[in-house]
Image (cartoon, rainbow, N blue to C red; front, side, top):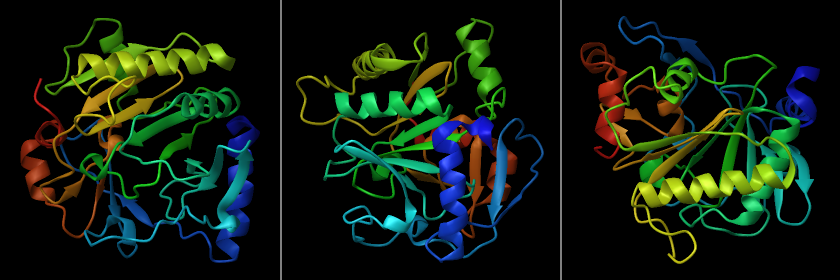
Length: 279
């Protein structure tokens, strides 16, 4: 537990209490081996489909007010760490704004400052879904963190990403940007994250974060201790799969509407290609 760092350890401790009092509802899943899909990790949802995965109408904002039984720690007056109410992985954290900020707007300096603060203490896989078309289930701004133990692989595609950064593997067949991280602590890390975010947005024709009101297209972010990736999106759903940022990290969730036979015939790269912007 200590290897998860301060916030990861606090998340697990808070999870035990929140699950006991009913505030936390972990999702039950089972590994679903499908030939030809490695290194992707596929899990089938065994629990009932939670509300945030159902394709329904408008929902109330669960973060204003947030459920204080899920609160891990407040980060000054701007952000706080909250447990994901329906986690697949225990300790799944949300970095949310304490006041209303739109998920579909540009991420701001304070978002990067607080992310860097948490990241320095608790490394892991960060991800962000910019809007519903990119897999976001809520319109209130929230970045997400899956804490990792020291030397634990950040995600199933980490080796492929490292190979791309080293120039040893061909790019994927969709529109994205991938950069190496060099800073891990303090204000330098926050500034680097912000710079990479803005550079990627410009290169992907998402717009200018300094002058544009909001991004011009949906996108996902994936951030590990070693790299930063932005993927431009066109839609959220294909072949019965709801694909958010974690799909581009190598994680797929099968629900009752997912077409496993399509995935078996076409493969996960085809699935991602169908929901991402063409190169």
